[in-house]
Length: 111
Image 1 (tube, one colour):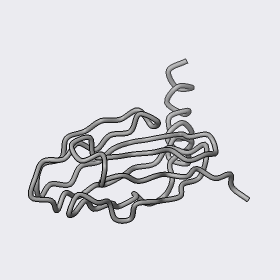
Image 2: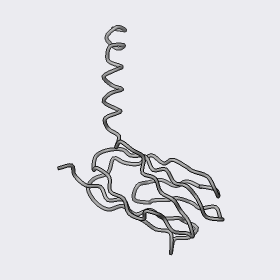
Image 3: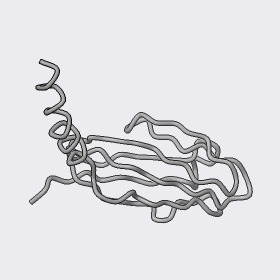
Image 4: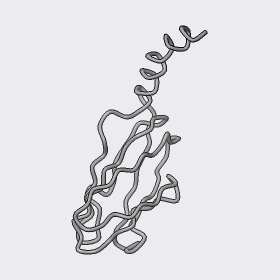
């Protein structure tokens, strides 16, 4: 039984790796605006967002739709794991500047 479990580990790891979108999505928040403010990801796959804060204030990267909330201090870069998402558009924002710092992620079906 132990040998069978050990033989399954590479299969499980390769399956888990295949479930992630390939490259991280890199965002910058500067002057209380996200760049880019819209990104597209494959539906049904987990993905990684890297956010760098170039503001002179602390920001709070948040999404009710994608269920995350994370503080990012000035000059720092954070990582947020998200998804998998159903096809559609999902909002994110800076909770400290919600009127100007907003953006969206659109999940699309693979062709």
